[in-house]
Length: 144
Image 1 (cartoon, helix red, strand yellow):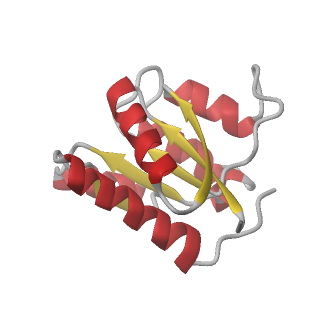
Image 2: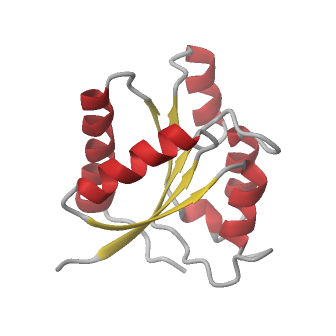
Image 3: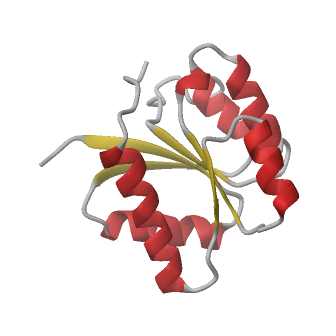
Protein backbone atom coordinates (compact mmCIF):
# COMPACT_ATOMS: atom_id res chain seq x y z
CA UNK A 1 0.00 0.00 0.00
CA UNK A 2 1.22 3.52 -0.81
CA UNK A 3 1.61 6.57 1.32
CA UNK A 4 -1.21 7.62 3.64
CA UNK A 5 -2.31 11.23 3.32
CA UNK A 6 -3.93 13.30 6.04
CA UNK A 7 -6.79 15.61 5.14
CA UNK A 8 -8.55 18.00 7.50
CA UNK A 9 -12.16 18.72 6.55
CA UNK A 10 -13.57 21.87 8.14
CA UNK A 11 -17.31 21.48 7.64
CA UNK A 12 -20.30 22.33 9.79
CA UNK A 13 -22.82 20.35 7.73
CA UNK A 14 -23.08 16.80 9.04
CA UNK A 15 -24.53 15.66 5.70
CA UNK A 16 -21.65 17.16 3.67
CA UNK A 17 -19.09 15.77 6.14
CA UNK A 18 -20.64 12.31 5.92
CA UNK A 19 -20.75 12.44 2.14
CA UNK A 20 -17.15 13.62 1.90
CA UNK A 21 -15.97 10.88 4.27
CA UNK A 22 -17.89 8.23 2.31
CA UNK A 23 -16.43 9.36 -1.03
CA UNK A 24 -12.88 9.49 0.34
CA UNK A 25 -13.18 6.07 1.98
CA UNK A 26 -14.46 4.62 -1.30
CA UNK A 27 -11.52 6.10 -3.20
CA UNK A 28 -8.29 4.46 -4.20
CA UNK A 29 -5.94 6.61 -2.11
CA UNK A 30 -5.07 5.90 1.48
CA UNK A 31 -6.43 8.92 3.34
CA UNK A 32 -6.92 9.60 7.02
CA UNK A 33 -9.71 12.18 7.25
CA UNK A 34 -10.16 14.36 10.32
CA UNK A 35 -13.29 16.49 10.59
CA UNK A 36 -13.90 19.61 12.65
CA UNK A 37 -17.14 21.61 12.64
CA UNK A 38 -16.09 25.24 13.01
CA UNK A 39 -13.25 27.68 12.52
CA UNK A 40 -12.24 27.80 16.19
CA UNK A 41 -11.94 24.02 16.31
CA UNK A 42 -9.98 24.08 13.03
CA UNK A 43 -7.38 26.43 14.45
CA UNK A 44 -7.14 24.42 17.68
CA UNK A 45 -6.57 21.27 15.60
CA UNK A 46 -3.92 22.94 13.45
CA UNK A 47 -2.14 24.47 16.45
CA UNK A 48 -2.46 21.23 18.41
CA UNK A 49 -4.33 22.89 21.27
CA UNK A 50 -7.42 22.13 23.39
CA UNK A 51 -7.61 18.37 23.08
CA UNK A 52 -5.71 18.18 19.80
CA UNK A 53 -2.18 17.81 21.18
CA UNK A 54 -1.71 14.61 19.18
CA UNK A 55 -3.32 15.90 15.98
CA UNK A 56 -1.44 15.07 12.81
CA UNK A 57 -0.64 18.09 10.69
CA UNK A 58 -2.68 17.59 7.50
CA UNK A 59 -1.27 17.43 3.99
CA UNK A 60 -4.38 19.23 2.74
CA UNK A 61 -7.33 21.16 4.15
CA UNK A 62 -10.84 21.20 2.68
CA UNK A 63 -12.40 24.36 4.08
CA UNK A 64 -16.00 25.50 4.03
CA UNK A 65 -16.47 29.27 4.15
CA UNK A 66 -19.64 29.72 6.16
CA UNK A 67 -18.65 28.29 9.51
CA UNK A 68 -19.83 29.01 13.03
CA UNK A 69 -17.58 30.79 15.55
CA UNK A 70 -14.90 31.71 12.99
CA UNK A 71 -15.42 31.96 9.23
CA UNK A 72 -13.38 30.22 6.59
CA UNK A 73 -11.89 33.61 5.70
CA UNK A 74 -10.72 34.08 9.29
CA UNK A 75 -9.18 30.59 9.30
CA UNK A 76 -7.34 31.40 6.06
CA UNK A 77 -6.08 34.70 7.44
CA UNK A 78 -4.78 33.10 10.65
CA UNK A 79 -3.15 30.26 8.75
CA UNK A 80 -1.38 32.54 6.31
CA UNK A 81 0.29 34.60 9.03
CA UNK A 82 1.57 31.47 10.79
CA UNK A 83 4.99 30.36 9.53
CA UNK A 84 4.19 26.65 9.76
CA UNK A 85 0.50 26.62 8.86
CA UNK A 86 0.86 28.81 5.76
CA UNK A 87 2.56 25.91 3.99
CA UNK A 88 -0.53 23.70 4.14
CA UNK A 89 -2.58 23.88 0.94
CA UNK A 90 -6.19 24.91 1.44
CA UNK A 91 -8.99 24.04 -0.95
CA UNK A 92 -12.06 26.13 -0.29
CA UNK A 93 -14.96 23.71 -0.81
CA UNK A 94 -18.14 25.74 -0.63
CA UNK A 95 -21.71 25.69 -1.90
CA UNK A 96 -21.29 29.29 -3.02
CA UNK A 97 -20.52 30.01 -6.64
CA UNK A 98 -20.59 33.77 -5.98
CA UNK A 99 -17.67 35.58 -7.65
CA UNK A 100 -17.24 37.73 -4.53
CA UNK A 101 -16.61 34.60 -2.42
CA UNK A 102 -14.18 33.23 -4.99
CA UNK A 103 -12.18 36.48 -5.11
CA UNK A 104 -12.22 36.88 -1.32
CA UNK A 105 -11.03 33.30 -0.82
CA UNK A 106 -8.01 33.84 -3.03
CA UNK A 107 -7.35 37.23 -1.42
CA UNK A 108 -7.28 35.48 1.98
CA UNK A 109 -4.79 32.88 0.76
CA UNK A 110 -6.79 29.93 -0.57
CA UNK A 111 -4.85 27.69 -2.95
CA UNK A 112 -7.96 26.89 -4.95
CA UNK A 113 -11.73 27.22 -4.87
CA UNK A 114 -14.16 24.41 -5.71
CA UNK A 115 -17.92 24.84 -5.66
CA UNK A 116 -19.65 21.84 -4.08
CA UNK A 117 -21.76 20.14 -6.72
CA UNK A 118 -25.41 19.40 -5.95
CA UNK A 119 -25.53 16.01 -7.66
CA UNK A 120 -23.97 13.01 -5.91
CA UNK A 121 -22.06 11.83 -8.99
CA UNK A 122 -20.61 15.31 -9.51
CA UNK A 123 -19.73 15.58 -5.80
CA UNK A 124 -17.85 12.28 -6.02
CA UNK A 125 -16.04 13.46 -9.17
CA UNK A 126 -15.03 16.73 -7.48
CA UNK A 127 -13.63 15.02 -4.38
CA UNK A 128 -11.67 12.52 -6.45
CA UNK A 129 -10.32 15.30 -8.69
CA UNK A 130 -9.16 17.22 -5.60
CA UNK A 131 -7.50 14.09 -4.21
CA UNK A 132 -5.82 13.22 -7.49
CA UNK A 133 -4.45 16.70 -8.07
CA UNK A 134 -3.39 17.60 -4.54
CA UNK A 135 -2.25 14.20 -3.32
CA UNK A 136 -0.72 12.57 -6.40
CA UNK A 137 0.01 15.24 -9.02
CA UNK A 138 1.56 18.14 -7.12
CA UNK A 139 4.52 17.97 -4.77
CA UNK A 140 3.51 19.01 -1.26
CA UNK A 141 5.87 20.25 1.43
CA UNK A 142 6.81 17.77 4.13
CA UNK A 143 4.41 17.86 7.05
CA UNK A 144 5.90 19.50 10.15
